Length: 254
Image (cartoon, rainbow, N blue to C red; front, side, top):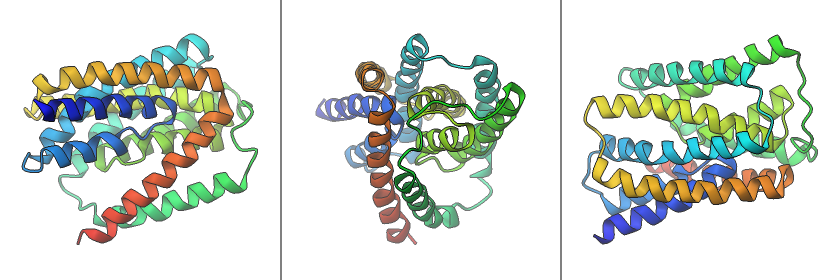
């Protein structure tokens, strides 16, 4: 009973953080592994996806009501992200991820330093490309980060946000809205794979999903009320925590 309570509370907090700038898995996945240390990792990842996808989708809807989203760019990118996530999930079965595990903290550190040095980065929404140019760049981002999400995963939302800010000229609020849509697509693809293989605890996923949606509602509303500067600040905090977590994992494991 208390196990379900703890993971449900964690799902709510994860939804709150994830709705603002991504990184909800930084909270929920470690809690699930701590509460269920003997469980198969695939079952924990599958149940996490079954809960998180609803909160991410809900946050996407909240952003879409208040932020102008370029659907002509984002819908093709979302489709590519989903397909790339499936490809990445297949690749992890045949390619070891140890090298990426060790490189990830360094990549995140460079991303953090770049954002800190560019104090104006992502504060103003100024798309840098015409429609066709923006579309193919978004598709490339979706393909690369979607495959990464299926293959490994930590920091997916933060990578989406950073690349939409840096490469497309979005501010952090619009980039977070776009990231929510693409992350919903990658989560759905991963969930389909886990569910097909029987790796979802649906009895636990339901209360977690409800809590995740509630957290996402609160997080999205806060982000929309406070704007791009607030989202940028949360982004820096989340990336900093990701560096600590992935760095610890990278050097603790063989």
